[in-house]
Length: 205
Image (cartoon, rainbow, N blue to C red; front, side):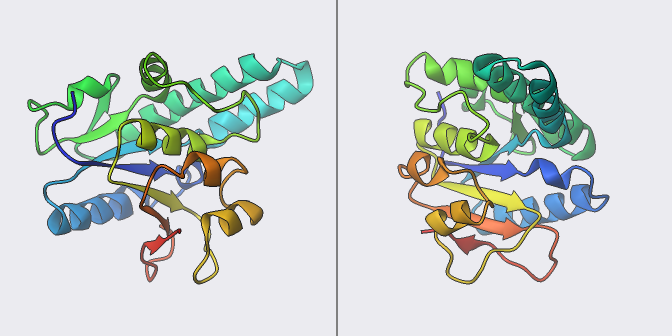
């Protein structure tokens, strides 16, 4: 059982090819810990190039919606393993209950999505269809809602217009079409272009 407030920090898969990712992400997380030391940031990594490979194979071979969806989630596992290698202090987590009182305060939990999805589905119906219209953003939002996370932070590679909403972010393709609905139970959603050193997290109402 999770015994402390948590936030889900979704690391966009598009950031994996950025040489500055480890340092920039570590600095971002250090700043958050300094501001909210009682909140545990739990990372989820998007599938990035690995999910794109699944998409291409689906286009070639017609894998089917369910198989492609599950493979795309497993692609997130592979991307998470890459991030685990890149980020100092990151520790892989395959069960949410591992984030209990015994979790080392110095470790940064990085969730293995496929196992977490199966674990949460056992007690929370999954509203997400098996479709390429569903991305890791909605998966992260569904997990955040299911575990009653205090907030969801989306780390991206692109800007949003000032005062953007979740609906506008979906219209612009920064998140998938299901994100506004799936993220509704999450009171606080923030968006940050991590590649921009002058940017800061902005709320997505």
